Amino acid sequence: LVVDGLLGTGLTPPLRPALAEVVAGVNAASVPVLAIDLPTGLDALSSEVTGEPLRADWTVTLSGFKPALLFGPAAHLAG
Image 1 (cartoon, rainbow, N blue to C red):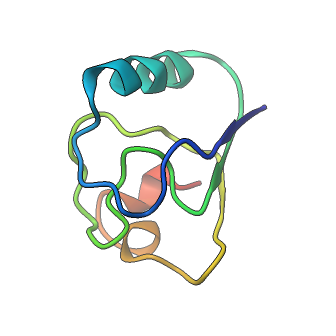
Image 2: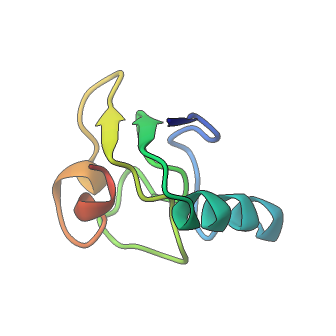
């Protein structure tokens, strides 16, 4: 199990190259992913997807739902 708590909700995508490599590696691995609050690489306020965000199997939110977890193309990445 990978627990994703790399970034907070203030991210403006795309990810910086070094972090994008980490996310790509996790996405390529055959391990389940639990995201805390929001999968790394998603913008909490937008349902749009930029670059390659982390694909979570589950997401635990801490202070309410974010639009990215509920709508549009970003929603299927949150588990």
